[in-house]
Image (tube, rainbow, N blue to C red):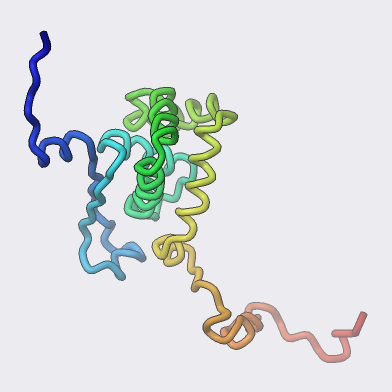
Length: 180
């Protein structure tokens, strides 16, 4: 005979979800824009340990020393949102995380890269790599770090925003700029 245990809503939610937290680096591009240096992100399908491991995986796939963990956490949030909607995806993510091993998040970078190389042909790795590239480089934090000002069409186009300002090249005399 099995005993049943009543679980209240708060205990159930705490056991089935995770949270990522961190601090923005002082002086980083996003820290200047953010209202606070601390950040937190609720996870609805992944545990905190799974979220942290994925964040480390994403940082290993696309390493940028000056980019805050908060930018990589946005990739985790994107994966978590899809995993919450799709049970098969959640299972695939958990299976992929298991192939990385529990010590992946604390391993040195060279060991993490070597481990990722062993699974780089697997669909889990390819899916996570694609998600990293799509979400990470579409964040305002990455824009601020890399100096990308965003799309120009809504701001009048590129020509009126300095695209044609080649101040770093010498002026070419008119007679030397022949037509082709």
